[in-house]
Structure formats: C-alpha cells, structure tokens
Length: 351
Ligand SMILES: NC(=O)c1ccc[n+]([C@@H]2O[C@H](COP(=O)([O-])OP(=O)(O)OC[C@H]3O[C@@H](n4cnc5c(N)ncnc54)[C@H](O)[C@@H]3O)[C@@H](O)[C@H]2O)c1
Image (cartoon, rainbow, N blue to C red):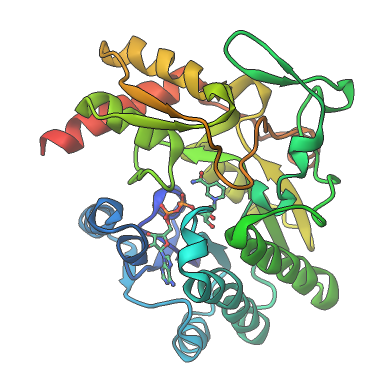
C-alpha cells in the first residue's frame, strides 16, 4: 500500500487531501498539532476535524507533531519514507502574522525547509506539493487599472482578462509578513525542484474554501462570512466599498489537482490555483449569494480603512494548470460551494 504524509491534516485543505487519497487506497500519515487554535483561539480549533478523520478512516494515522520540530520531522520522514508529501500546514493569516512574526516565519518558512530537507534525505523521488498563496505577489495586483462596476471591481486591462498568471512579478511590493514568509517557502520549494531535480510544486492559492473550514475573521473569508450570516453576527467589511474580488475554489477541487500533480509530477513548478474568473465574487456578491441560501439578511458594518496589502481584485488565471493537466477542471461552482458551507455550518452550530 502506498503511503503519503499530509501536513496540516486537520485543516481545510489537509483534511480534504487526506480523505481524497484515502479514497484512492493510500495510507495517510497526518501531521497536525492544532496550531490553528493557538493562532486564532478556540474558534480556530481543528480537533473536531482530526477526530472525524480518526473515527472514519481506517488507513489514517495522526501524528501530534509540530513542523518546526526539525528532529521530529526528520525522524518521521525517515521512518515512513512516503511516496508523496502534501504540505498544507501553515500560519495562514495575512493580518495575524504581524503580531507573531517569529511563529509565522518559523512555521511557514523554516517548517517548509524542515520538510524539504527531510524529503531530500529520505524520499527525493516523492512528489512534494506545497500550498503557497497569491500573497506572494504582494499588493502589486492592485497596480492593475480597475473599473468600478455596480457590485465589484474588475480589471480594466485586457492583458488580465483571464486573471493573474504565474509570470506576474513577486517582488518590490507590500506582502504582509505572512506573504513574505510564504515567498521564502515558495522559492525554497522551487529551488529544491530546480537544484536537486526533485518533483516539487507550489500552488499559489486564491481563496480556498469549503464546508470543512474553521473560518475565523482573520482567515477563511467565505466560511467566516457564512457563519456570521447564520449566527446573525455583524460582519466587518474593510475598505474598497465591499467590492473587493476574490476567486474561490472548493477544497475538493484543490485535492483533485494535488492528486493530478502527484500522478504526473514535474520539477519546481508553480501554479496559480483558485476558482478563476467564473468562481470569483466580491464581498457584496457573497452576501447576496449566502442570503439566497440561508434566507437570512447579512448584518454588516463598513470600515473605510482597508486591510494592509489587501487585494482589490484578484482572480487566478488557470490556463497553465489546465494546459499541464488537461484532465483537471473546476467541478464545483461558487453557488454550490456556498450552499455546502451553509449546510455544514448549520450542522456544526447545532451540534
Ligand atoms: N484557505 C485559504 O483561503 C488559503 C488561501 C491561499 C493559500 N492557503 C494556504 O493553504 C494551506 C492550507 O490552508 P488551510 O486553509 O487549510 O489552513 P488551515 O488553518 O485550515 O489548516 C492548516 C492546519 O495546519 C496546522 N498547523 C499549523 N501550524 C502547524 C505546525 N507548526 N505544525 C503542525 N501543524 C500545524 C493547523 O493546526 C491547521 O489544522 C496553507 O499553507 C495556506 O497558507 C490557504
């Protein structure tokens, strides 16, 4: 039986990847120490997800390990010699990073290096798939001319009609400390691919979402928005008139791409992975969609000041992914995804 290591296995993407590969007959070693609860407090707790994986998947083994623990990571990879490493553990919040710069960098940059080096020493042939972020582009996407539509901002330059491609510059812009620690990891993952010819890739995520997210105000846009709607809680919009645009991809479609890369890996690749233009929406549009499924009016307040380095309009150009992996496509529409998130929060809030 083939086995893989999934870091951040209790998180949104990690847990989806665990379930997906389990369904394909793999044994999965999950690494997670519930650090999300440390980063975001009890609302970010992912133990419920870990418990569910342990109860429902016989070929899943949980390892209570911190990816910053270099010796622990080296020992586990040496023992397991996995056929693949899917690295989804991170300090994932733009805004949180500024208050915990050491924890952020140690987790995102050094934790990634610990895993890469363990892979190079003990399983250099194993595909290494790293969840990166569109924040590696910093706030440079905000320099693209925009036009204001009724409910959203839109690119006013035909070069970006299909979204932001992977050749977009990553430096000389404001990233947030999170974006900077993720750049360090992203470049390191590429370098292990190019320098050591290891099968690595970086997936620069837009908004990754789905029913299994433990959304909090600082991370997990749609999940948190839907939760506020259902609880009748006030959602705060930070600047840009609420017309800022994100592209949203269901975690299942992320897991399907990770599997496609695992089956047919390349060295040191980079892909922009999001919902693309079709699955993009502004905050105001997300309110309307959520209301249509929940039947509840969204309560919100507007703060003029935007989040530092926040994108005004961002959606991923998916053409490179589709060219390299023609069998992969988005299978879940934005409406379907929001409907699933509404359903899941209803259940979780009642239990
Ligand atoms: N969700 C998004 O919108 C989004 C967007 C772009 C990129 N990403 C990236 O995708 C990846 C997965 O994101 P997610 O939304 O699933 O995040 P998540 O917070 O839901 O999951 C991450 C998991 O990693 C665990 N973790 C964190 N630090 C750890 C450590 N030091 N050791 C062991 N485990 C640790 C957490 O407890 C959590 O369960 C991250 O790299 C994130 O930066 C996410």
